Length: 354
View 1 (cartoon, rainbow, N blue to C red):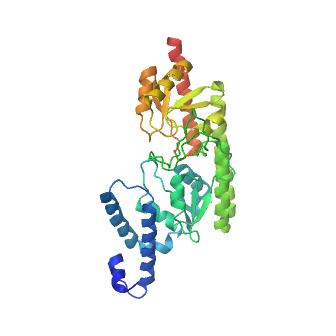
View 2: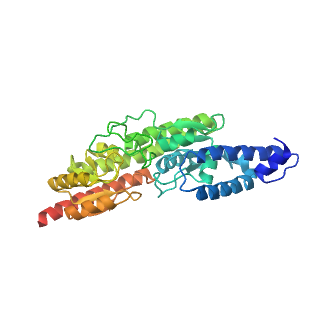
View 3: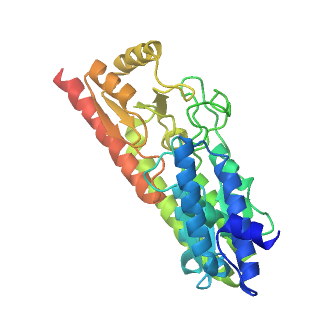
């Protein structure tokens, strides 16, 4: 590339030793652009603004390029989802810098990774994925010689969605372009089971040990510690919910199949195959809820609660929260257990009053 074209593309001048460093920044810029195009942008204007912002952070931050993969002797690890990033941090401890591509509190349905998230993934030593389409769009664009892509769900026994539960892969979005919302497809929410989370943590420990053999003893010790926490919180859920075996709980989005299996409960979803609730579907759910004497409908904080609110009004119940993407998995197992217990208790109280 001649110097005039280089200055036009990058917008900066270079001299001698800075040339290679700037070329690396520009190459990274091109890679990020390719990834951004994989995600739908709401308008040409927003894409332009994001591109300008991206160029700014890439070129002003290129001096830190050599510190991205290993920052202060810590491996940079990126994960597609907050719960996986939590496990990576728990296992890696002080030897890793664990980041998530999906900020906590955001829904992958309407979220496109920003420049900082993409830049982290490009510079990461490892990228941990559960295999969702959202994550695959990122992992396919990574340089395998630079960033190792690890399927942390390897060895997990997947359960399938039934027609009653429907299917909505977090990364598929509401346009259904990926056609992975059908009954009979694997439920992607694999971390919502204590046994599964232990398998995921072990896969993470193995990957970190391979990438950083010097930290093997640390990763093994940390894995055993998080394993104990996961098993303890899983046992808490099983024990506390045992009196409600085979009870149904209604959710807006079918994210809790693994948790339901672990605790011997039945998940019934308002949303069917990832689509917004229709009048016919809502009528069917209302009939089922009245038959089951359901008075509490659970909804995730990132989803449109309209369908759940309509059901709440129809059955004279209330809407409560469950969060499938909370990062601290052991704490979330306890929170979900307590929320379900409170819901079942309220249903019993309302039934006795009537």
